[in-house]
Length: 202
Image (tube, rainbow, N blue to C red):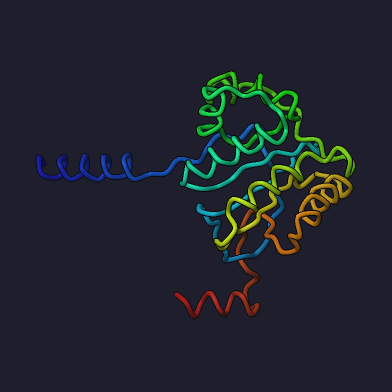
């Protein structure tokens, strides 16, 4: 019995140390279902999230904290945000950001744990003149130039088309025309070509 308990604790310890936890999101998103075998990349990716109210959030997905540091540092300079080094450090551990630039300083003044408790109003995207998502995407694309970058849009199933169109507009202004939609996977219909393909891989 003792060796069995030892093995059980070894396995438990392994999963506790090796598991990569999903970062907290500012809102709950109910994505539409689809049949897909593609998996999300967790390196050199950019994700835009949109909730059912049309609020938009931006996240640079990378394990390279230096890229996130350069992103917030560049936005701080070009958008005159007046962020302190501490506030920029808080961005490093933050999840998706969904506030206008004029509220970013007050959000990043809080620790990442406290930021998760703040209700974020979303990044303005309503028209081309005030589409602040354009600047987030522009600076992220510039920093990740030379790498194979994946672009993701995670939209709520109840989101409206005009809100989605505003996000696409920010992508188009940055010459991004190819992106992936994040959905909830479901099984392929039995007998379909995708189902047969999956069966062959098993």
